[in-house]
Length: 390
Image (cartoon, rainbow, N blue to C red; front, side):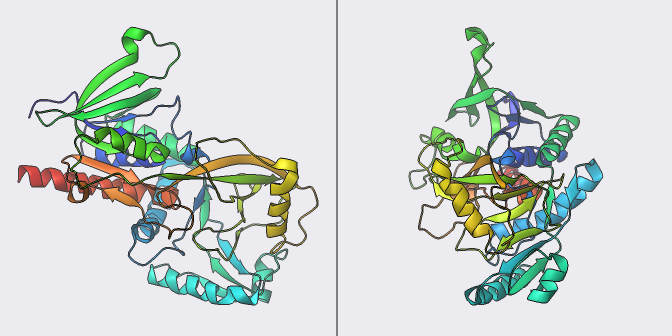
């Protein structure tokens, strides 16, 4: 095989792409991350609840369950070792009606199956002793749930990549990928820097290994390899879903995160706290056709719905206390009404193409799972490389 310009390129500079690049660089690989925006993590990674999930909700042996539980431990350790702000505050999952009790028991059972054995069930009095403002008939206490400074995390990951000899290149959009006859891949890139001239705007880079971690653009980028994919493989379709967050204008009377019993794959309008202790509520779930981060609250209808849902567990929410916050868009790979899909991490055994690993549908608990996903992808790529040479 001819010599590539770069051994491995990661397409996408969100928390997942950065975590993968870090894992690869720690194993001695030459790695470059290409990010189309002018800063890392400006899409899904910076527009979420920043929650470190315990692993309560996910199906046994799924990638979501396995990588969340492993990633949680890795993330707390990484934060401590790298000075990233983190708060292992815990959370309550609250049942507000008799209909919620069976679901609460199912969550507890699933958590234990997934290896989350620190979850305890509380009656109303015990829950109120922890959070007096909460109204519920029962709750689950998850002490290993927490929150993390996502921007601090990504900055630390970027630093690890650089220290290990890798690089993160911003304002660089991948516009084409092709498989060359010599077995290398050619990536055509275009600068998104407004100051770039026509001469430097377009570049072709040859690479041995490609990791597609493009989040909301995963399907679009994956389809660039259409001519190389085997005929029986097609990229999973991405179905974007937007979620709105409202912030609380007054100090929050809570020390823990508060989640209602979930409805299907949606975790409901929950209360989370950022590192500074500021409360926010959300996200809701609205399926969309185009990527648009605009906050929509026509005639206050969305705010009224949030207030109604929040008052199921916090009846003393003050009037007019919610303020529009921000939105986030999740790269789901299942459509409205379909069963929630597991993470899709496709290597040669699935798609049949050497030296390519593509990640689709990495939504929650993607942040929690990020470091474990990084190691998982690195192991997959190195195993495939060993098979080639062995």
